[in-house]
Image (cartoon, rainbow, N blue to C red; front, side, top):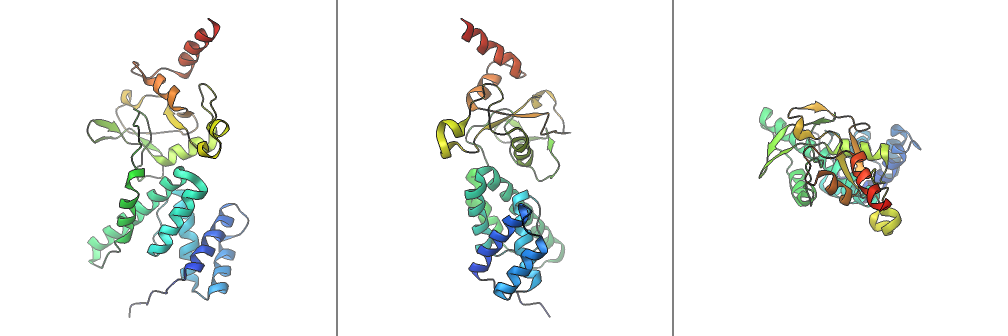
Length: 254
């Protein structure tokens, strides 16, 4: 007999998000978060675990296999966008994509019905999955949790696959100041500029031509859009940070 899926109140999902953040920041254990959710809303431990652990997987861009309902998925994504910006949202969308692909494959294997709303949610956010300006080394998503770069894919011209998890890790390590000119979007634009910066690949991947594992600490750096353009303008491979800084220093000295 098929187990009947438990209906989860919207208020329980709101609490699950709050509890999940406490787990993320090590203020609460995952088990304690699940227990509180169970006590408050009288839901099964398996269901509570799906919503708490599912949020953590979304925040890390990782595959989750326990189902979160449509409202819960959309609520989590909106809250992640508010709390972590587009960087966090893109990671979460990676997780939703992995979830969608996982169940699509399961359907192929056993012919059971496939939940369709993750694919619809991805379509809703599809405009965020492609950057407004594509530089030669801007990062887009791949499904791997390791940072694999360099695989060619055909869009209109050949470009190179990127991993948004690598971008997020780079920014976690280096912060959001431009590595060339030290421009600070938060300082100049306030909240509008919070967590905004481009990420530049120090080794031009067009010169690599094959997959390799990228090191977010040593291979990637944050740069403002102006410096990013100047690193690549009329230069193949791209200029080094030091070369561009030298050009800028000469003009300052004149």
